[in-house]
Image (cartoon, rainbow, N blue to C red; front, side, top):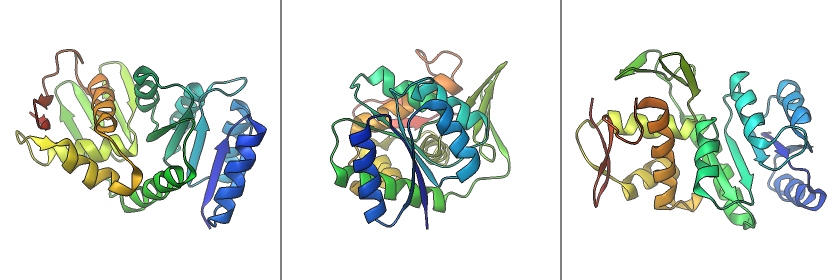
Length: 226
């Protein structure tokens, strides 16, 4: 049975998530603040984490950062009432794999969870490393090193980067990326791809505002230039 860790301080929301996930056959662990979430990750080894951004003691962003820093490789889906793109990108930069904005439909959330778990099962991480400019991408340990900085690499960011790198110089449409990585059942949008690209650029490019390797193919999507 798959274990899902739910980090949510709203009692009604937490109860609703627990009931729906339990009905779907998941083993559900619910905690209500940041420190409790970090303890639960160490004790329960969840297959997926649903992490609310606005939780007590440590916010979701800091919890996500510490989980990845501590070696958690399971997918993290952030739950946020905020609709600002900068908050979504920040979560991706810290290692989150996906985000769902409240209020959300149960069917959409369940679809995203199933898609994330399926992707995690199917990931084959290369044992080597990939040099892109001044950045060293370590797929095996899900991280990017650039200079003195180190960044976590989310599952979806890694899959997106692999897809681009496998076809250097070729423009790949957002639709093709969405279908290949997210799947239609996960309710993705073009902004989903764009946000992941922004996050990848901030980790890999020396100047994310003037990228040299992950480029926009205007009117199409994106392409990778070695």
